[in-house]
Figure 1 (cartoon, rainbow, N blue to C red):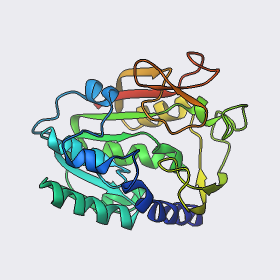
Figure 2 (figure 1 turned 120 degrees about the vertical axis):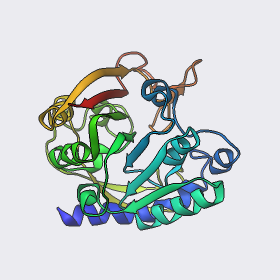
Figure 3 (figure 1 turned 45 degrees about the vertical axis):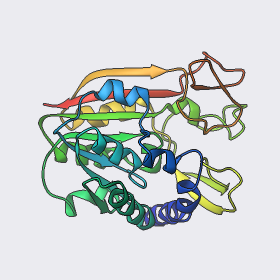
Length: 263
């Protein structure tokens, strides 16, 4: 299993340069005050002012720092050395107070102490994790009693489709590791990058039961027939500014979100 994690770590390290220079992340726009958070996240998580927020799998910290701008006391975690180095640089350039920890999310309790009002993670995160039980245990470990866990994520139905979004290729449930030969990246499909990555599809039942087994109580669960991001093939942009797969508009869920409280 470690070889898969290390390969993914390498993939995220080499993607950073393309990501931070991409229109997708629009770092310059963000530096000028634009938030990187979606309307879904902002509406559903609500006021974070004065709250301690832990962001799991934070990439280069753009979302983490967007929460800091809204008044949260933030800590971000990611396993990519390059991403965390840039997150710290970005925080310094923006004059924002933040802590960033570089480690595998499973190992975070060995690198960080304390309890948090909010544990947050979103979009393209759990598919890099082979097992959601230790993930849920980490969430429960860091949440204080009454603390909130929030997740917004791409729907497992989307991950069943092939890269061209034309037919079902992968199992809905976790059927083992999925190996992919990649060129470019979702933020810049023409970037001069070639690498392997390894992922796992997780059903909604697997996600929910892992959280429930670790003492979290579900407050809500929502599904959305669109993506806020143009990161899949054959997408069309709607009048609402969101993206749907051409020919499947309104027919499949593309994103889900949940909020749970530690009992």
